[in-house]
Image 1 (cartoon, rainbow, N blue to C red):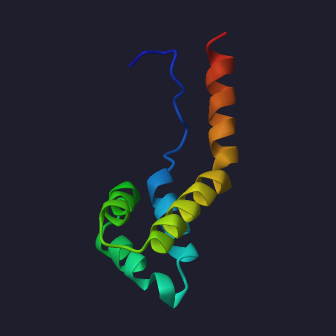
Image 2 (cartoon, rainbow, N blue to C red):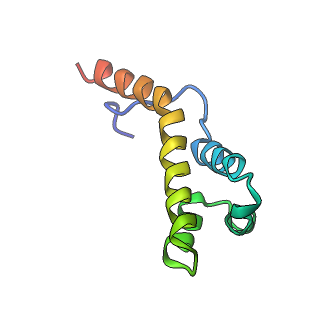
Image 3 (cartoon, one colour):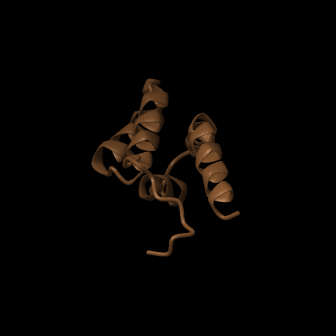
Length: 91
């Protein structure tokens, strides 16, 4: 492996965290169909694609997108820390 890339000391299960955040944000009965999609598919990106391309209301699609963006924002500090480590190592 190329030494310029950051090597994490522990495995970070980002996809699992994203899935959990999304699932926990979709608590309203109005969004139960999206929770069902997430239960059937642990790949949150594929679940998002299914909702966006599927027969869901525009409100459901907008809310799922909003939840996804908020989940990324919640995990923002993790990405910032990794980016700083990468840029420090490359100097």
